[in-house]
Length: 143
Image 1 (cartoon, helix red, strand yellow):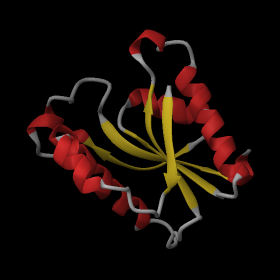
Image 2 (tube, helix red, strand yellow):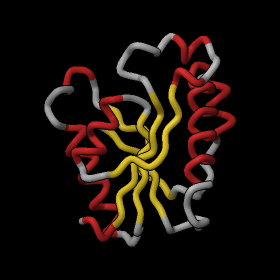
Image 3 (cartoon, one colour):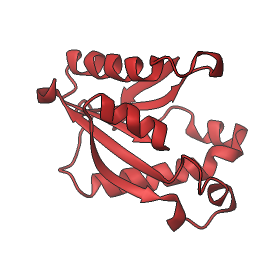
Image 4 (cartoon, one colour):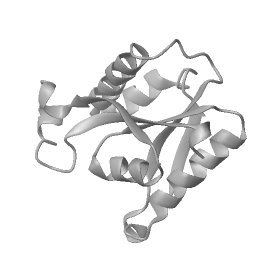
């Protein structure tokens, strides 16, 4: 499994290059940007070092259903808080990552329903485990 952990307020390195190479994820990235803007509008202004973004959780298909994603989520929270980040955020793109966040003690903050987005690629996800994008949060004092 893998988890990309980064400062929530830091720009994603080479994002334009990533989007150019992976046009299929461009719509999802735009939705995540919209979700981040919605989240940021509900909280005091976050500064670099205030929050870590737990991003891009993945487990190889041959190793799924073994609790690896849940262990990675819990370990990432501990790692981030131990390094001084008072807040951890997880952008869940589907039900599975949402369940991992909940199991780690994270709380739902904001969401965008896939049904509210007019896009052919996103429409193809409706009715699957992907019903909404959601930001989950965890404060260091909850450890």
